[in-house]
Length: 107
Ligand SMILES: O=c1ccn([C@@H]2O[C@H](COP(=O)(O)OP(=O)(O)O[C@H]3O[C@H](CO)[C@@H](O)[C@H](O)[C@H]3O)[C@@H](O)[C@H]2O)c(=O)[nH]1
Image (cartoon, rainbow, N blue to C red; front, side):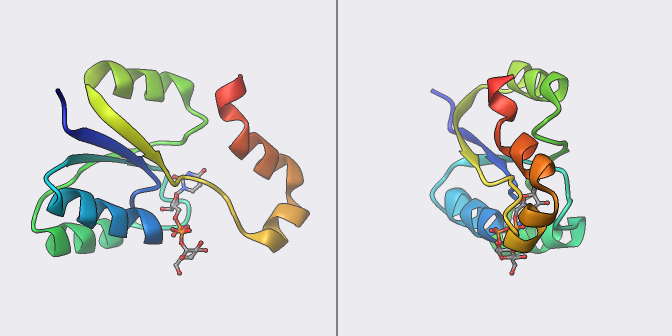
Protein backbone atom coordinates (compact mmCIF):
# COMPACT_ATOMS: atom_id res chain seq x y z
CA UNK A 1 0.00 0.00 0.00
CA UNK A 2 1.21 3.53 -0.82
CA UNK A 3 2.36 5.75 2.04
CA UNK A 4 2.04 8.92 -0.03
CA UNK A 5 -0.09 11.76 1.30
CA UNK A 6 -1.29 14.74 -0.74
CA UNK A 7 -1.22 17.90 1.38
CA UNK A 8 -3.12 20.76 -0.24
CA UNK A 9 -2.01 24.11 1.17
CA UNK A 10 1.11 22.35 2.39
CA UNK A 11 3.27 25.46 2.04
CA UNK A 12 1.10 27.37 4.55
CA UNK A 13 1.52 27.55 8.29
CA UNK A 14 -0.50 24.55 9.46
CA UNK A 15 0.23 22.61 6.26
CA UNK A 16 4.00 22.93 6.53
CA UNK A 17 4.02 21.76 10.15
CA UNK A 18 1.82 18.85 9.15
CA UNK A 19 4.30 17.94 6.38
CA UNK A 20 7.17 17.86 8.89
CA UNK A 21 5.21 15.54 11.20
CA UNK A 22 4.11 13.30 8.32
CA UNK A 23 7.70 12.94 7.06
CA UNK A 24 8.92 12.23 10.61
CA UNK A 25 6.26 9.50 10.80
CA UNK A 26 7.58 7.92 7.60
CA UNK A 27 5.06 9.19 5.04
CA UNK A 28 5.92 10.48 1.57
CA UNK A 29 4.45 13.91 1.05
CA UNK A 30 3.30 15.70 -2.10
CA UNK A 31 2.36 19.34 -1.60
CA UNK A 32 -0.23 21.05 -3.82
CA UNK A 33 -0.48 24.81 -3.28
CA UNK A 34 -1.22 27.87 -5.40
CA UNK A 35 1.17 30.01 -3.27
CA UNK A 36 -1.55 32.65 -2.80
CA UNK A 37 -0.58 33.08 0.88
CA UNK A 38 2.87 31.49 0.95
CA UNK A 39 6.08 31.25 -1.06
CA UNK A 40 8.71 28.75 -2.12
CA UNK A 41 11.12 30.05 0.53
CA UNK A 42 8.74 28.62 3.15
CA UNK A 43 8.76 25.27 1.35
CA UNK A 44 12.57 25.25 1.37
CA UNK A 45 12.50 25.97 5.11
CA UNK A 46 10.14 23.06 5.62
CA UNK A 47 12.45 20.78 3.62
CA UNK A 48 15.40 21.84 5.78
CA UNK A 49 13.44 21.14 8.99
CA UNK A 50 12.17 17.82 7.68
CA UNK A 51 15.59 16.86 6.31
CA UNK A 52 13.99 15.77 3.06
CA UNK A 53 13.06 17.16 -0.34
CA UNK A 54 9.31 17.59 -0.75
CA UNK A 55 7.53 17.02 -4.06
CA UNK A 56 5.71 20.24 -4.92
CA UNK A 57 2.99 20.99 -7.45
CA UNK A 58 1.96 24.61 -7.92
CA UNK A 59 -1.75 24.50 -8.56
CA UNK A 60 -5.17 25.70 -7.57
CA UNK A 61 -7.85 23.50 -6.04
CA UNK A 62 -10.24 24.92 -8.65
CA UNK A 63 -8.09 23.46 -11.44
CA UNK A 64 -9.91 20.18 -11.99
CA UNK A 65 -7.74 19.13 -14.96
CA UNK A 66 -4.51 19.52 -13.00
CA UNK A 67 -5.98 17.70 -9.99
CA UNK A 68 -7.09 14.80 -12.22
CA UNK A 69 -3.55 14.63 -13.65
CA UNK A 70 -2.04 14.63 -10.14
CA UNK A 71 -4.33 11.78 -9.04
CA UNK A 72 -3.54 9.86 -12.25
CA UNK A 73 0.20 10.21 -11.64
CA UNK A 74 0.27 9.36 -7.92
CA UNK A 75 -1.14 6.58 -5.80
CA UNK A 76 -2.20 8.43 -2.65
CA UNK A 77 -2.87 6.76 0.67
CA UNK A 78 -4.66 9.90 1.83
CA UNK A 79 -5.34 13.58 1.27
CA UNK A 80 -5.13 16.35 3.88
CA UNK A 81 -6.81 19.51 2.65
CA UNK A 82 -5.56 22.86 3.99
CA UNK A 83 -5.78 24.92 0.79
CA UNK A 84 -8.50 27.37 1.62
CA UNK A 85 -9.34 31.03 2.00
CA UNK A 86 -10.19 31.96 5.58
CA UNK A 87 -9.76 35.65 6.33
CA UNK A 88 -13.03 36.88 7.83
CA UNK A 89 -12.80 40.47 6.59
CA UNK A 90 -11.86 39.38 3.09
CA UNK A 91 -14.70 36.84 3.03
CA UNK A 92 -17.19 39.67 3.69
CA UNK A 93 -15.62 41.85 1.00
CA UNK A 94 -15.36 39.00 -1.57
CA UNK A 95 -18.16 36.53 -0.72
CA UNK A 96 -18.39 34.91 -4.17
CA UNK A 97 -14.64 34.24 -4.24
CA UNK A 98 -14.94 32.47 -0.87
CA UNK A 99 -18.06 30.56 -1.91
CA UNK A 100 -16.33 29.26 -5.04
CA UNK A 101 -13.19 28.36 -3.07
CA UNK A 102 -15.26 26.08 -0.79
CA UNK A 103 -17.63 24.41 -3.20
CA UNK A 104 -15.26 23.40 -5.98
CA UNK A 105 -15.75 19.72 -5.27
CA UNK A 106 -19.48 19.87 -6.07
CA UNK A 107 -18.98 20.96 -9.70
O1 LIG B 1 -7.38 28.41 -2.69
C1 LIG B 1 -6.34 28.34 -2.03
C2 LIG B 1 -6.15 29.04 -0.82
C3 LIG B 1 -4.95 28.90 -0.14
N1 LIG B 1 -3.98 28.08 -0.62
C4 LIG B 1 -2.73 27.88 0.13
O2 LIG B 1 -3.09 27.22 1.33
C5 LIG B 1 -2.17 27.55 2.34
C6 LIG B 1 -2.97 27.97 3.56
O3 LIG B 1 -2.12 28.24 4.60
P1 LIG B 1 -2.11 29.61 5.47
O4 LIG B 1 -2.67 30.73 4.64
O5 LIG B 1 -0.76 29.78 6.09
O6 LIG B 1 -3.18 29.32 6.58
P2 LIG B 1 -3.03 28.55 7.95
O7 LIG B 1 -2.20 27.34 7.81
O8 LIG B 1 -4.41 28.42 8.49
O9 LIG B 1 -2.18 29.60 8.79
C7 LIG B 1 -2.53 30.49 9.83
O10 LIG B 1 -1.29 31.17 10.12
C8 LIG B 1 -0.74 31.92 9.05
C9 LIG B 1 0.64 32.43 9.45
O11 LIG B 1 0.55 33.16 10.62
C10 LIG B 1 -1.69 33.04 8.70
O12 LIG B 1 -1.18 33.78 7.58
C11 LIG B 1 -3.04 32.44 8.37
O13 LIG B 1 -3.99 33.48 8.14
C12 LIG B 1 -3.54 31.55 9.51
O14 LIG B 1 -4.79 30.97 9.19
C13 LIG B 1 -1.25 28.66 1.79
O15 LIG B 1 0.00 28.11 1.46
C14 LIG B 1 -1.98 29.13 0.52
O16 LIG B 1 -1.07 29.56 -0.47
C15 LIG B 1 -4.16 27.39 -1.80
O17 LIG B 1 -3.28 26.63 -2.24
N2 LIG B 1 -5.34 27.52 -2.47
